[in-house]
Image (cartoon, rainbow, N blue to C red; front, top):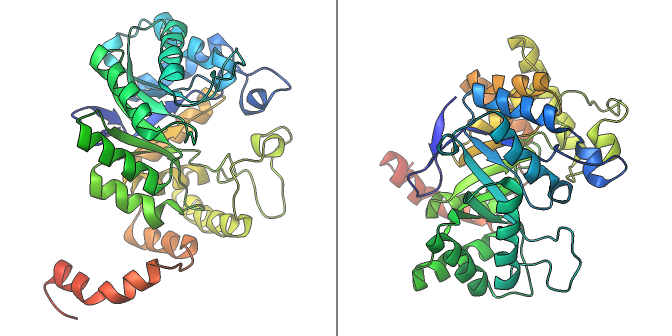
Length: 350
């Protein structure tokens, strides 16, 4: 297990992060389709993750209506994990429990109420990373950032992050933080897979330019890249993709990627899922990849990806099959910047 700096901070997090979306869902609900693990099962997964060297756990206040936070905190207590040995992240945006007009969003009001509730559920006095879970069009970005900065100043939160924002929104927030001396977003949690590389158009260049870390969610595209699915099969009955078809994926491209990964996986005698995760771990913008599981065996298979080193030939094969179609202004930037790029990288004009 390797450890990477989170954004521009001095905090190191494991290259895999345990996601807890499978904790606590109730049968017949959206969260139940994703996972309905009980406390004992959650304890086993957290224990297996920590034993493998994972020091990073991600949850959210909306997962299973808050039960995921409760079970995550309880698992750490049940296992006797010293608080300083684990980096814990949660999120704010959606509502849990109440349904008032101000019970969602990124207003100062909702952020302050939500962090208190999350800390209570998790039996903690601080969160290491507090992330806004999406964009709130009703709240000025500056109000959100000032509220988050207050949490940092008061010690309730160590670092702040963002999830599911566009490049211009992230850059605007970074500018506001710099201008006013506020805590800045140190990480972005975003969807990124070999079959969904849209992030590379605008967001990855932004992250690398500004020193913001990337936390990848749904690295197997909701199980579609696990190897259980093929063009002519739907996967196991009751599997996540058959009950909760998310995130949206270009299936033709996804199965082209699965075919290429399966050939590599068979040659290496590993799972297709490990190849999909290993590809992400080779991407320089990636800080950590969030892996969720319903079984310890599944988690251990995912952890096996950390020991894989794909060859240049394998990476080239996967890059070709998963390449994004050209899109403006990318193709124009590539065309006009070629000479200067060669000069910068090679010291020559050719």
